[in-house]
Amino acid sequence: MDRIKFLGDVKIRPTLIQLLNLGMIICSALMIWKGLMCITGCESPVVVVLTGSMEPGFKRGDILFLHMNKEPIRAGEIVVYNVDGRDIPIVHRVIKAHERRDTGEIDILTKGDNNQVDDITLYSGGQLWLNRHHIIGRAIGYLPYVGYLTIIMTEMPIVKYLLIGVLALLVITSEE
Amino acid sequence: MHSAVQRANTAATIAAILLATICAAASFLDAFNSPSLQAHVQVVKINRFRRQLDGNDEVKMTLKMSMDLTSLFTWNTKQVFVFLAAEYETDTNSLNQVSLWDHIVQEKERASFQVKVPTKYPLIDQGTNLRGKKVGLVLHWHIMPISGRMIQGKMPLSNFSLPDSYTTRS
Image (cartoon, rainbow over all chains, first blue to last red; front, top):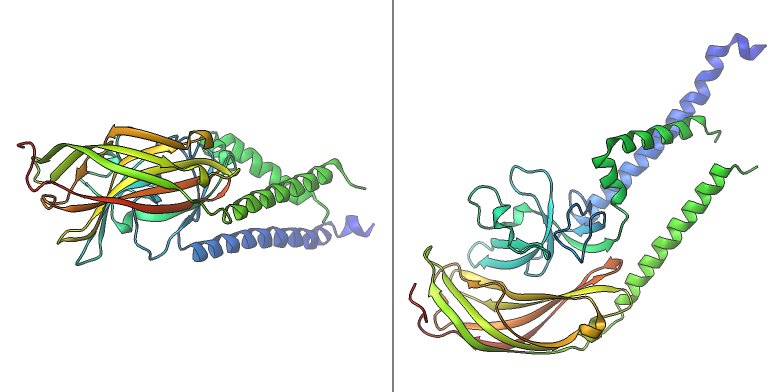
């Protein structure tokens, strides 16, 4: 009887607790992400490999762990860089490095292991070299396949909406 | 008591934790591998040494290399990327590293070999400093695992000096 009478009031508290739980989960995830950003020194400490240009080492859907520090960039390192004016970062290997004696600035040329030619055509305009400020991070570790879900979600957004919908449903309807 | 969803959730979580632990352990054990590799490189011939149209020196050569990379492989190794870099310094640049040749070794059985090849990438300077220049040849390798941390290493091999004058007119 009471439940039906104060239908409005009774429902508020559990719902608020549910929302709070959801908020806590989201905040924890954000904290971990930002914490990783601080530790690794990169804006995006984890990236997903999108193309086959580094095969057979990295395949589409693999995850790379990045790290960035003040150490000079040297040939052979696998770096992730952004070309001016493009958002999608590229993961390739440094094949040439020229370090200026006076400024310490470095000119870098990269190439994908599986590509026939180097990346000079990818750099914007008449740019011949990459510099340190283009580099987001160095790839230091690797996990296979895990990122494939991200690729599926990007290329078929319906999967993303489905997943979020199902997760939201589970959180709202769960008793705990 | 326990719904199917709860059981699936628990099973999936445990599976994920186990997988992550195995990956971490595999990568951790890689650190204990102390490789002892041997390599030798020799410049057989300078095929072309000229000044390009844009003003930079360019060198192409034929190299004879032999190397044994088997000790780099562990059971967690997917491939070893090996490349030979020409390293030298100039008045304007404190370090120049130019990759001349690279190769991917995917199997331990194929990790010991000899090749005589022309350089894959030309040695191009930022300027015209290469005449008579002493260049060091350094072998670099990058061990790419099945999962986990990637390991880099290098070993300086021989030095050689470029000729005092261009061999081809530009």
